[in-house]
Length: 413
Image 1 (cartoon, one colour):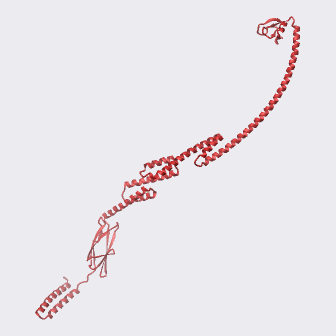
Image 2 (cartoon, one colour; image 1 turned 60 degrees about the horizontal axis):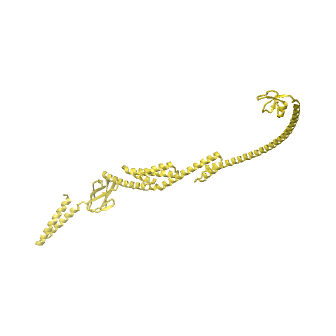
Image 3 (cartoon, one colour; image 1 turned 180 degrees about the vertical axis):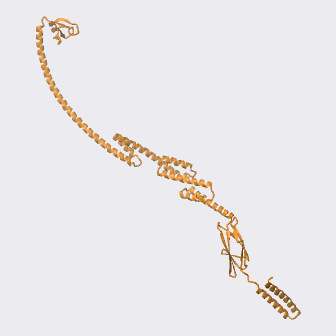
């Protein structure tokens, strides 16, 4: 026991004793002054001891000095300070009676510094406690964060599946990439969305350049996609119609080309009209074919002009030839007429001379025929001097032969 405590205890005992004796003095009516002096002395002793009591110092004790959370992120702090001190934890005033407790809940994976301040009689005592998240709590936070990331990824993926677009796909891809684990189901769904976007890209290409091969390939892609295909029905139908029209147009163009080619070979007006009709029925303009048809028309006109010129020349030549032939015929006819006239005159003259010669010969023959023998045939028209040629020759007189109107043989006479 320290000195000031002895003085206080001694003064307290004397005070009690003086009080008891003072009470007896009042009862026994004895002198009270000595007792009062003892009482005053006891009070003085207590006052002297009290003056030696040390003044209470401000203090703040924390346990433990370092905190680590439990798996849920909670931790518990205990401490003591002056009972009359004002206590603040992270700026919040805490009621206490010298001892206090405080529960802390971390909300993230960072280390937290907890500031504890005690203010006693104007004197501040400040301590800082570091609170670190435990491995279990970090795992818990990661699990919660993974659940939240998984939820966001699923939501983004559902949006991309419902409304496929590159932006929605990028968001879903980013969310899935942010996951700390691999989720095959989500990755497969994301791959399906990517395939669907590829299908949309193929559809856009098909719409720009519709072909039968592209349409068949696109329909194969659509059939293999697990996502909804209803949204593509109208666009695919439009592409099918466009491909059909294009194929029809291609056939019409091919037919028109073939007719133009044939007309270019024949240069016939009927073939040109057929090619023109085929070209005018095409649903789209064909500048190249129109140019070929225009050139064909010029060629046909040139051909017709050349044929007309040739026909005119041939007609003129025929007319000239006909005129020449007619003139020649007339000349020949005239010459023939002159020749015939001359020949007739000559023949008439010859006949006249022959008649004169015959008459002279007959006269000579008649003069020499008397008693002359000649050779004749039963059916012949000549008389001979001997057997001339084949036949049944018999002798006759010249007079008999002349009587039968037989004439002399040119070989015998």
